[in-house]
Each structure stands twice: as structure tokens, then as C-alpha cells.
Image 1 (cartoon, rainbow, N blue to C red):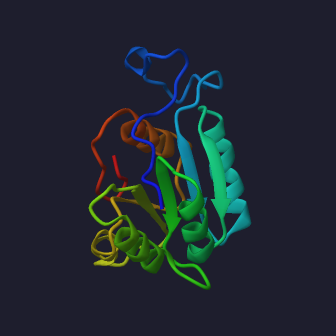
Image 2 (tube, rainbow, N blue to C red; image 1 turned 30 degrees about the vertical axis):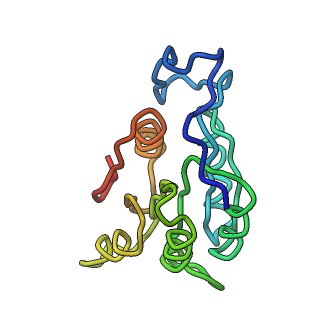
Length: 163
């Protein structure tokens, strides 16, 4: 498996001049990064894909953890939005397996998507190797804030809203 791209492609050859985006102004003229949306709900995948594409992200979808690992073995992703509860392979196991594959070479940013608000759930996500945590339903403004933070900085959000 190749490590994810270290830089995000933007208009022009100098990405240091790229201006941060805002939720109010889509940047369809630039590619912010490649995002893999992993969720067993087709409607959730479509909604997230449309929101991410509206700000210039390239988006791929996977229905479960097995599909996600297969795609991550073939393509580099700048960010993975990973549902926790899915059939065939859940997000926790997919994340643990990806972390074993990556080793010390690189670290794909993975944000948990979950409707589970039980105490200790956030810790389970982080313990499996996820970098952040978002509660469903996810507002567009929260999603865009997290994507901006992850794709324009090296900081990784943790917390109930990952922001």
C-alpha cells in the first residue's frame, strides 16, 4: 500500500498561496483533496459526497470496512470518513487493519462517523486508531470545518465535534 499524498493539489503549482475556503463559497475550481466516505447507508454516502464535492474535494465511496481497505490498497486518500457500525467489517476493525498496514511509514487521517453517544465510545474510536470523532447527524458547517482543518493544517481534531 502506498502512503497517502503528502500535499493537496491546488490551482497553480504553489500550494502555499492557496486561500482557505469557507462554507459560504464553494471552491469547485480547485481540488482540496481526495476523501473516502465509508458508510453502509447509501443516503449518508451520497449526502457526504455532495457536501464534499461542493467545496472541491474528490470523493470515493465504500459500503463497508472491507471495501474501504481494498480501495485504500489501490489509491491514496487524504482523509477517510469512517462509519463505526457496518456489516462485513466495521470501522474499528478496518482502521486497526489499516494502521497495521501503514506501520510507521505514514498515517492516513481517519475521522469516525457515529450515531453512538454512549460514554466511552469516543475513546473506542481513538483506541482503534481513528484520529477524530463526529456525531451523526453531521451538519454541513461542521463537516466543512473539519475538512478545512485536516486538509489545510497538520492538526488532527479530537472531540465530540472534531473541531
